[in-house]
Structures are given as structure tokens and as C-alpha cells.
Length: 181
Image 1 (tube, rainbow, N blue to C red):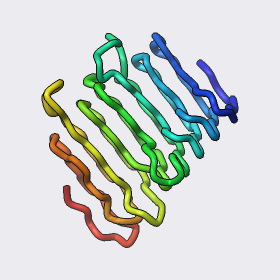
Image 2: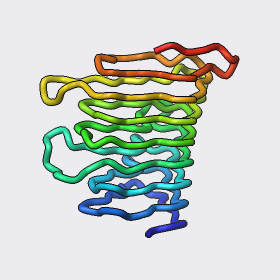
Image 3: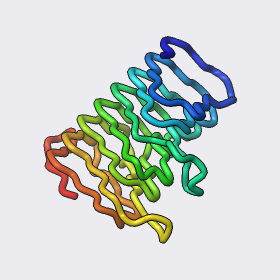
């Protein structure tokens, strides 16, 4: 278990071959990657990723890691990622699922390529620009479920490459308009 530390540098926080660890209340500022998670069943709680080029990354596109993903992010903050146009969540090749609950995404986007079973529940997406949600698959992996449930968006999200089983339930804009996807 790792808790309450601050990283403010241009290097990266990388978690490799780690399983069943809890990372709580850490803050990462001004990094290229806020966090690269190459382990399984890791739990991130109340963490802050601010002004990083990319926020939280799982990169298993090439299938190099046998046990990656299937963890969770809870009550984390992603703020001004990639100069307000970067990916707060950037996952490729995560076919074991991941749960993202109660997180705040401010001026950042979502990118999921060849992922299955990724769920966003009770998340808040803010910033003056629309949140880009890119959920796509190529010939590497069959399509898989991505679910947004009970999420609030400042603006209607912009869907890029959504060729998977993308579903939304009980999602609304800050103005109270229902979002259907």
C-alpha cells in the first residue's frame, strides 16, 4: 500500500508486475504520464493527476503483459491533461476490465482501444470543450462492453470511433438534459 506522496517532475510513475496494491492520495503534476499501470488488481483511490501529457495509462496492445488491468480508480481527479486536449484515461489492450468510480475529469478525454469491460460510474466530465470519448477496436481483439452509468457531462460528449458495445445509462449534461448512447 502506498499513500500520500507528491510527484512534481517530468519523469513517470510506472507500476510494473504489481498485484493487489493500494495507491491512495498520491498527486502527480507536470509529468509525461501520470501513471503507467502494468499490473493487475491494483486499486487507486483519491489520487490527483494534473497537467500531465497523459493521465492514467494501461498499454497492453502488443499483449506483452499477462496480468494487466482489472483494477479500479475511485474518487480520482484528472485536471488539464495534455494542455486540455489529452487523454485522462488511455488504455489499449485491456481485456480484463477496469472500474472507474466517482472520478472527476476536467479538460481531458477518454481513449480505449481493444478494451473490454471498462465501466465509468458516477463520474463528472467538465471543461468548456466537449469530452472526446474514443472507444474502438481493430482486428486484434473482438469488441467489448464499455459502460457509462450515472455520469454528468458539462457538454454533450463527442464520440470518436465508437465501434464497440458502448452503452450509457442515466447520464446527463450539467443542464439536466439526458444523454443517449
